Image 1 (tube, rainbow over the protein chains, first blue to last red):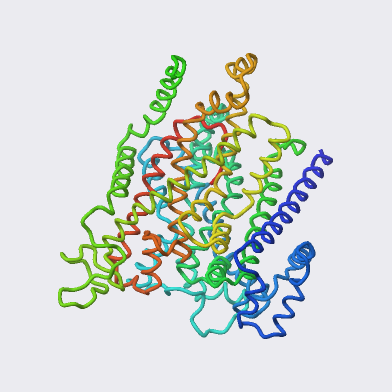
Image 2 (tube, rainbow over the protein chains, first blue to last red):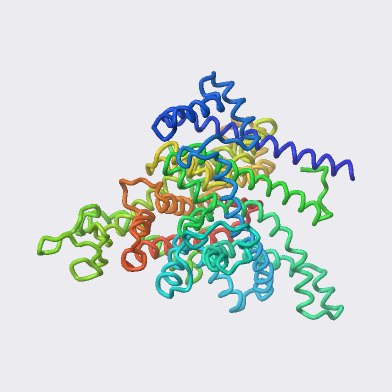
Length: 328
Length: 300
C-alpha cells in the first residue's frame, strides 16, 4: 500500500514536471514563430541602449536558437521573464502582485461556489421532479447562460451607475497608498471594491457544480443503504446528509477543470471591473504587444492550474479510500 | 451506385438520429429553445438583405448633423452609437457573425476531436498513449489565456478565432469519442466485420462513426455555444476581428466609450441577443445529453 502510494506520488510529480517543461517549450516556440522578431520590440525606443543590451544579454538573443532555448527555460524556472516593454520593470514585479489580486477574488468565490453546490444541489436533487427542483435548476442555468462580461456589465450598470452602491472599478480609491495585504483584506474599502467582481464570479460558476451535485444525489438516492437508513428511523434530513456526503467526490474532481475555467472567466470580470489581476494584465499586455508580460502571465496561470490538478489528484486519493494508487 | 445495404444503413442512421432529437420537443422549454435557434438562423441568413441602414456608416439627422448617441426613435429604432452607427443594424448584422463563428468553430472542433478519439480508441497501444498524452496536455492549458495569447500572436480575424477554438476544444470530444469507440470496438458486429477482413478505415468510418452520431450532435451544439461565447469574449476585450460587426464588439465599444450609464439602448440589445442564443443552445444540448447514455463525461 505505502509502496503504491509513493509510486502514485512520484508519477504525479513527474507528470507535473513534464507538463511544466512542455508548457515552457510551447511558450518559447510560440513567441518565436510570431510575425516579427522579439528583438525588434526592444529597439522601438521604449528602452535605453544599455537596458536593451542587458535584455539581449540576459536572454541570449544574439546566440543560436538552441542556446536561447536553454537560457529561456532556466531563466523562467527562476522566475526571470525579463523586463516588461511597457512598464520597464522586471516582469516578476508586475506578475506576482497581479496573481495575488486575482486569487483574492477567485479563491473565496470558488469556495463559496462549492459550498453552495453541495448544499443546494443536494437539496434540489432530493426533491427531484417537484417545483423546487424545476425552478431551482432552471434559474441557475438561465443565469449561467449570461456570458461573464455581460453579467458584469449589467451588475455595473445597476449597482454602480444607477444605484451608486458600489465603485465602478479598480481595487482601491485612486491615489490611495499601497497597504499590506493583511491591512487590505481586513479593510471595508476592499470589500466595497471586491463585492461586484466577487458576485459576478459567484453567479457565473455556481450552476455547473450544482447540477453535478444534483445528478449525483439523484443516483445516490436509489441505493440500498438509503432504504436501510429509513428503516433505522433516521429523519429525512439525516438521510440526505449521508447521501450528500457520499456524492460529493465528483464535485471535488470538477474543481480541477473549474480552476482553469474560473481563470478564463476571471479575465473578463477583471476587464469589466478594472480589477488589477493577472487576467487583466494579460489582456493589457496582449493589446500592447508587451510579450514578456504576456508570456509570463500565461505561464503563471498555467502553473496554478497544473498545481491545482496535482492537489486535487492527491486530495482525491485521501478522501476516497477505495481508490487504488496502483492503477491509473 | 447506392445499394440496398446503403439504403438500410442510411434509414437506420436517420431513425436513430430522430429518436435521439425527440426529447428536445417534449417540453415547453425545449420547443422555445429550438424555435429561438431557428429564428436566429433565419435572421443570420437574411439579415444583410433586410432594408436597414449599413452597420458601419454614420447616420445623419435631416438637418445634416451626425446622429450621435440618439436614443431610440422612429427614425432610428434602437438608437445610435457614439459615432452614429445604427444599433439596430449592428445587432442584426451580428447574428451572422455569431452563427458563422459558432458553426465554423464547431466543424473544426469536431473534425479534429472525433478523428483523434476514433483513431486513438480503435488502434489502442502506442497510438493511443501518444494521442491521449496530447489530450492531457490540451487539458492542462487554461483555455481563455491560451486563446488570448494565440490571437495576440496570430492576429484577430474570424478565421483565427475559429482555429483557436478548435485548437483547444477538441480535447473533450476526443476523450468521449475514444471511450465510446473502445466499447463499440468490442461489440459483435465490429468483431465479425474484422473477421471477414474489412479494412480498418472502413470499420472506423463506416461502422463505428455512424454509431457516434448522437454524441457528435451533442458536441456540435456545445461547440457552437463555446464558439459564440469565445468570439464574444475576445471581441469584448478588444481582441476580436475589428472589421466585422459582432455583439461582443458592440459591448466593447460601449464600454470603452464610457457610455454604459447613459446609452442603455446600445448595451441591452447585444447583451440580450447573446444571452438568449446561449441559453437556447444550452437547453437543447442538455436535453440531448439527458437522453444519451454517455459513458464518460469530459469537462469543457
